[in-house]
Image: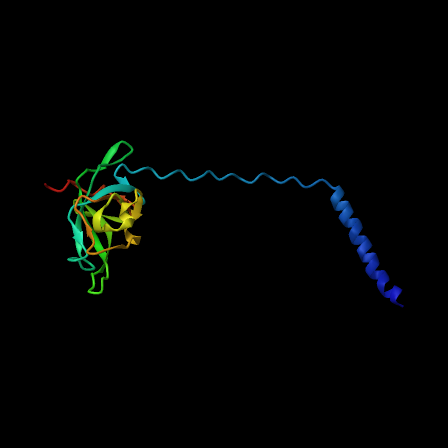
Length: 196
C-alpha cells in the first residue's frame, strides 16, 4: 500500500531529474551584454569655489583668559596664509574672522583650576561669512597653559580642556580650521584683509 502511494511521487521525481539533466546539457542562452551607462561627467570646478573641509591656517589675534571670559564671548582671529586653490588666491592673508568661547571654568577658592575651550566660527569675506570648524592649535605653549599645550602636536581646540590656575591663550596663538560647507565666492565683490 505504501509502495503504491509512493510510486506516483517517485515517477514525478524521476521525470523532474531527467528534465534537469536535459536542461544542464543544453547550452546557456546567449544574453545581450548589459548596456553601459556612461558615468556622469564631473561637475565643472567653479573658479570661485571653496570646497568643504578645506584647511585654512589661522591665528587668534587677542588674548583669551578663563579669568575674564564667559561662554559665548567672541574673539578675533585672522587667516595667516592666503588660501590658494588651483593656483588662484581665493582668500587673502589677513582676512578677519571670529571665534567663540564655548566653555569656561573659573578658578575656585579650594584650588580649583581654570578651564577654557574655544572654537573658530567664521572668516569674513565681504558680506559673506565662511563657516569654520575643526579648530586645531599648533601646540608650543608654556607656563600655566597645562601639559597638553606643551606637546608638539596638533590639538583639537573643540575637544581640549585646558587646566591650570587662570588659563590664558595669548594673542598670536596659531592653528588650523576647516571650512564647514561648500562656499561660492562668485557674488562677493571684494574680499579684503582686515585693516592694521
